[in-house]
Length: 220
Image 1 (cartoon, rainbow, N blue to C red):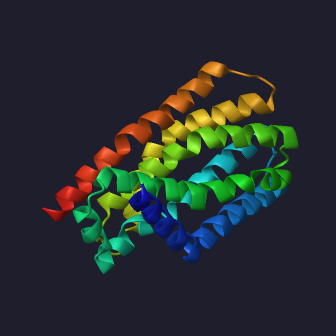
Image 2: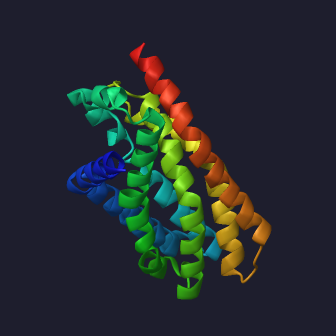
């Protein structure tokens, strides 16, 4: 159990001390404030538009810290050591995804009730949206590991990373936005919740193995 805790503590320390956490959170706030001001000046602010902006801002902001998932370990040789360690590569990938969720997605979700104010979303609706995000965002972190592995070792691959990952976010965004819109209108659909939960569970179950295969192919 100690190696798992050590790796998780190492990943948490690296993520919190790097600039990615600060940049992701600031980018999240900037997108929402900019979109809110633009809609107020040039359009009609509706609950559907506000919810869509919230989810899209979270997805785009989460991408900023994906690149450092494996790249730093790859550059300094830590990834080679991890692959030779007794802990399976799939477990290490899962710990990295959990770290990404804790240090990137979770801080943005904590800010959700506050950033909902300029978007015109009521506080009680913001709490329901936060619950939906808690269910859907783990899938974003685990899917991101695939994109980080595909662009491993590639310089200037941030654009490629976005191209690879953003299309895979679509099911999460579609269901997340739809459920959040229903909740803001006091419509409760348990089946939609279960579908979003199933998407997250499937991603948690299979993405570590897919990412592991991609990394191993990169080393062959």
